[in-house]
Length: 342
Image 1 (tube, rainbow, N blue to C red):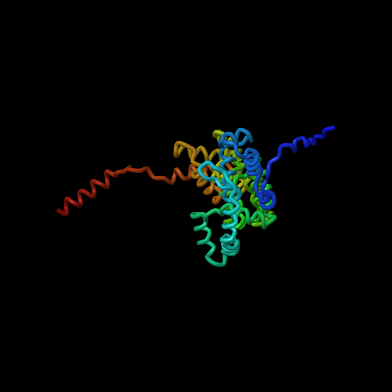
Image 2: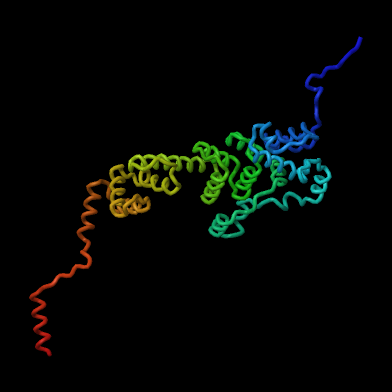
């Protein structure tokens, strides 16, 4: 009798380097893990980035980004189209790599005592520091469970595996701008709710929040409430003035929030200020409308009737330009005096 051992799917196996599991299983995103497993499974074959993208239902750019992750972390070596293991390179880099604390960016809190607050905020807004590289990013994710949780949550909020640039930006927001992990997560959730879950928008908001020192969940919640209230007011203003429906700019949101929620102007009075603006300038200029409403607010004007009276009062005070009046009697008398004098 002959016997044959059947292992089913185990009849076809391939090797996976231990470092992928030991060091990168919790660090790498889903995209990176898919790409490296596809590499290993198709060892010895020729393929292109597009082949991998099609096989994994990924974008080619995400495949390249994943390949960059594995090359910069020392798992593989990519040289003129040839992919080879790079254990020796990884050992050399590990031996020569300076300690983590020497390359770690200074947290925002530690920088406050080194330079004036105003000067620090201005320079940081104009010149962003260099983003951390993949090696440092991997070290921080591995060493800090909070950073690991941030990256995993970002994948869920973005609805896709975040790439290396996304991760580096989030790490910089935490370590350079000083925002706590839970505040960054709340910020990302707010951005996702607006349909603006992209890293540039999130980074811009994070810089603004850092400048406003929004460093707790309570302050973040209050900020989001104010932003939400402002966007709601901006939508109301668009309908009130018959403007094209669009996503309001930050300045439009600020104006609308001030007009409706801070100054408490009625829709009729806001419409009146809009009409004054169009009559004077020929188009809608939010800043001009804001100046009109600001003057009314300071003058205690709260009704359309008061606004009309204020406008009429201003018109009566204006003198006609380039208009000269003559008193014929006075002219003749003055002329006679000059003639006698001569």
